[in-house]
Every structure is written in C-alpha cells, then in structure tokens.
Length: 172
Image (cartoon, rainbow, N blue to C red; front, side, top):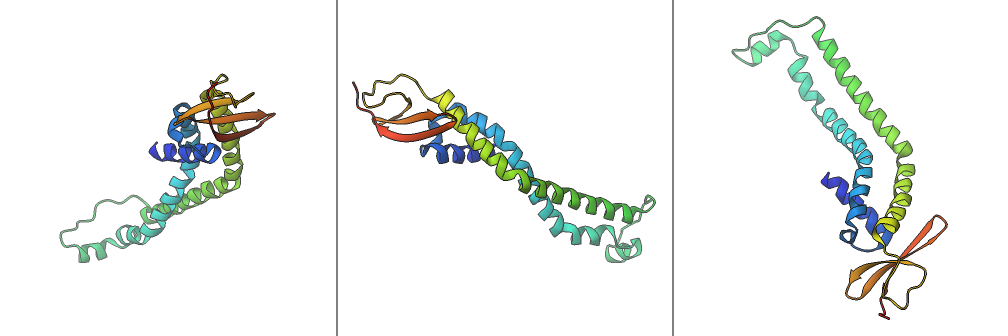
C-alpha cells in the first residue's frame, strides 16, 4: 500500500506541481487506482526470482535419491508420487508462462491505464480538493486550493481539460 501511495503522490505532483500532502482525499483514491499497476510489477519480480532460483530448485528436486543420499549423509528417501520430477518441471514452466503473460498484457494496456488515471485524477483533484469561493481579488471563474504563505493553486476547467497553476493570492 505504501508503494501505491508513493505512485499516487507522483501523479498528483505531475498534475499540480505541488506537494501531494495538500490533497489527502485524492491521494487515497488515486492510491487505490494504482494497485492494478503494482500487480504486473509483482509478476516481474516473481518471474525474476523464479528465473534465478530454478537452478537451485533443479538441484534439490531433480537429482536422484541415490545422489542425494550420497551428498547428504543421513538422508532417507520417502515415498514419491508418480512422475514427481515431470510434474515439478511442468508447474515451474506454467508459472513462468503465467508471469510472462501478465507482464505482456500489462505492457499492452499500461499506457492507456496511466493516461486514464491521469485524466480522472485531474477531475478528482478539481472536484474534491478545490474551493469555488476565495478571498483572492486576482482570481475569477476558477477554483482554488490554499497552499500557505499566501499561495494558492488555481484550477480552471475547459470542457474536459483542466489546468493547474500556482499563484499569489491578493486579498480583497
């Protein structure tokens, strides 16, 4: 969850050029929408771990019981199920194919999902975090969010396009 919060903070900062801590509601909602992006990253990590550890698995699971008995004194072979080695190989190969499929699928739709999150995040920040009324004389027909030190984030909407910029607030 912390990684999703970090990613959502990056999205908010890209949109507004302001610290994401000023937008706590949007931060939480965007973090929830970042979770589908984290799943392919986990698959890549799992794929790398499997790829690195397969030689170790092969050493422990594919050698004969006679070799294991020779290399590890005191080892006693127990009852194996039928075609144990073949089953293990098929399971590992299936897991590698599954991870590769998820990774390729995420690469195909990843950019579309990121642009979708960016568009929806702009609307979320505009709707949830901005105020219609402000004491600033220099801001008309726009929503504001107070940042401190006399600065405000000004957001304007033109159809489905949002623009955000930081301005100095001149009190009426």
